[in-house]
Every structure is written in C-alpha cells, then in structure tokens.
Image 1 (cartoon, rainbow, N blue to C red):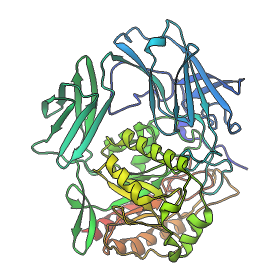
Image 2: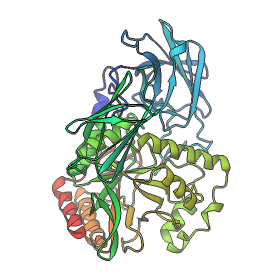
Image 3: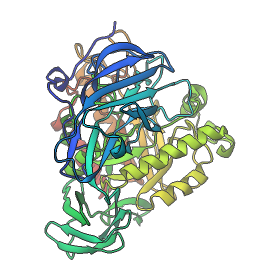
Length: 561
C-alpha cells in the first residue's frame, strides 16, 4: 500500500503559493501573481477547484488523480488589473503546462503552445476589460511519445514515476511599456560578460560596484578590472539594471570560465583556469506532495544546502527542466548544474539499459543516424532542446549540457552536437551520457552500475555521469513499503554509510588520479519506489551526515591536486 508522504513545507502550505517573482534574471516592479485556486473542469465536467501551480496528480493541487489520456483539462479564473498596470502593454506568462495549452480571455482565443517544460508569453492587451475571465485548456497524451516526457509513465514503478499533466508552474501578468525588452541574453566570454537585449535597444547598463555602461544597438561587453570569479566556494553575483527607453529591468551576471586543458597526462575540465573536480549528484526534481513542483520555492534552497553540507558542488538535473527559481538558487548558493535535455521517443529496457550494462561490447551501437527515424519525434526533441537552452543559458551555475541519456531517443548524435554547439558555444557538452558514444562530444561520459568503477582517461575529459544508487529505506519515510528499487540494498544505516564510503575511497578516488574529472552519484532524494537517495522522498530524514561525507570531498580534491 502506497503512503501519502508530505514535505514539511507541504504540510504548512497556506495562502497564495509560489508568491515570488518567477523570472529572477529579468525582474520588473509591476507584476500580478495568478496562482491560487482556479475553477477546474475535465471534458466539460466540473471538478471543483484546483490549486495552481500544482498538477492535478499531486496532493497539493487538491485533486490528487490522473485523468485519462487525451482529456481536456480546463482552468479558469477571473481577475482585475491593478491600478499601476498602465504602462502600455499587459503580458500573460505561463511557466509551464504539459503538453499543449490553449489560452482564452473573455471567450476569445489568444494563442496556443506545445511543449510541457518551457515557459511562454502572450500579449493580452487588446482583449482586456474591466472584469476579465481567463481560461487555459490543456491537452496531454503520454501515449504520444514524440513529445519530450522524461520520467513520466502511465504505469509508475522502479525508475519511472507518476505522470504530470496541465499547469505546473506559476501563471502571472506583467505590465510593460509599448516598447519593451522581450529578452536579455547574458554570455560569459572569458573574464568578460556580454549583455544584449531583444529587440536591440539603446540605453544603459548599471552594474553595482562597477559603474554605468552604454548599451548600443542592444549590446554591451563588460570586463571588470579585477573580476571576482564565481565558483561553488564563492558564488559571487554582479547585480545590474538595464534601462532602455521607458523600460527598466533588474538582473545579475557572474564571471566564470570553463575550459578543457591538459594537466599532467590527462585532459581536465577547468573552472576559472584550474582543473576542478565536479563532485555531483543526480537530481530528479520530484516531490511527494507536489510531484514536479515543490510546495514552496524555498524547498530548492533547502535541497541545495543539504547537499553542499555533505561536500557536493554539482547537481546533474536529470531529464527535467525546472522553474527558473531552481537555477537562481544554484547561482546564488553556489551549486554547479549539469543540465539534461528532456528525453522523448521509444525507450527499450533491453537495448538501452540491460545489454549495455552487462556487456561493454553492446555499447558499440550501429550508426545512430539510423535510430529513432521518425521525423516528427526528432523535430520535437530538437524543438524542446532549443527552448531549454534559450530559457536557461543566462544562468552561470549551468556548466554542462547533456543531450542524450543511455541511448534513449538517441539519433544522429554527431549532427545534434553541432546543432547544440550553435545554440551555446560557452559550456561543456556531454552528447551521449552513459554509452553509445560517437565522435562529437566534449567529454567521455560513462555510467557504471553493478560492477567496480575502473576507469582511465583518454583523448577527452573523463566523466562518471552516473554510479552508485545504493538503496537504504527508512521506515516511516518510504512511499512504497512493499517495493524497493535501487542498485544494491542495505538494511542498516551503518552498512549503507560504509558501502558509500568504500565506493568513493576505494574506487572513485583512484580514478581521479587516472583522469576522472567529474562523478555523479545516484541520487539526491528517494523518488517513489526508488530508495537510493541521500535524503528521503519527504526530505525529513538524511541518510548521511556531513562528518561522514566531507572527508570524501577532501579526498577527491586532494586526488585532483
């Protein structure tokens, strides 16, 4: 029997949820949060109220069930504009809605969006009245695997989780002038940062502590004389304001460099000019009460700080794109992110997991240009990939992109690498995490489960992008008391702690001296049947203590030195 676990934040949730500005790197002082209880119907049948921004499958939504595939989920609510919404235009922002969303205002269709993991914006100015009725109708069909869907499945269990549909991020309004900044682009270029606006506007950029710089034709390059470099040890952010015409937005940037350089006998991943060991964890981004969405934004910071206390400096965000608040907290608190794309297409357990795990020879796949040949599925993956990069690339904490994971949906990866490099040429790219490697990738990325970690670097920096996954279940904090999923099961905390310590010190640390640059342990938290987290699914119990893990972090640093 499944247990309805709750986080402390979920138990204490009151008032308007997620009442923080949803776009931390482009803030204005005039916005209206539309989160809260909306009217909700499914296929024209009234379901009562639903709490936005939580998906209907979650307990926090007030619904707690998944509707049949292809059902039409309709959200509606009334609103009046605040008096200060008088700048010229009014924009409606929807953080994310899975998979397709159609938007209506006062019974007039305004637009539609496809893709369940990215934000979208609609100008609603021409259709506003004194009293307004907003309706968002969502259509979701997990049987259509052309859409990126990640770890969602209709039959949850093992490493597959409860599906999500409908709105799962903040819905909000913003007042902007007639000519306004639609997008800010921030790029690290060595010890400089390039800031540009879309559309290209003239104006000024005022950087706290550095002065005022001219924004000409929408672009300015800023090179501090004595830059303070961003790192997990010193996550320094430069706050700045852009003023262009009647528009004004606040943002921040960081100065940090990413390079691949040879140090000794091996190619190394370098942060700020020095070889750096990326000591990380797999992070699925699921919550027992909110599923895709934690009860409050502060939950992100709590997860990040809990992992930092254990000595970790990196999270691999696994096959999910988060609200920007997550990346802001990583920027602010100093947690590097290796960001996955969201997988789509058919997954084969035998081809994509079993054979490559038990046989290294099976990792030599046929040319992957012949795999997953459905053109619509390929286009949808590339569309989601491009949207994710454009939405997230301003965040300095993101240091590496992962395109394909363990062959799932993989196609023509050398060509996709080139496409990705055109989207962002400032970060590392892991084209094929795990196996089925091709020529074009910045790193040699391996997954090792069920065998000893025995790796040595070669022509490219070596990354152990998944390993571990040891399962230890704590009574009273398990979602599924009857089923346990993980890679090696331990009955006591003492056995679990000893196994993790020995795995690192006896297997991973020696590999650092042989060229290993990064390691990603599975995983941050338990997720449903998976009990291989370092904290429980409800985030109420930690399985490891800082005094047990910090010596491992120091050993990894010493080995890198």
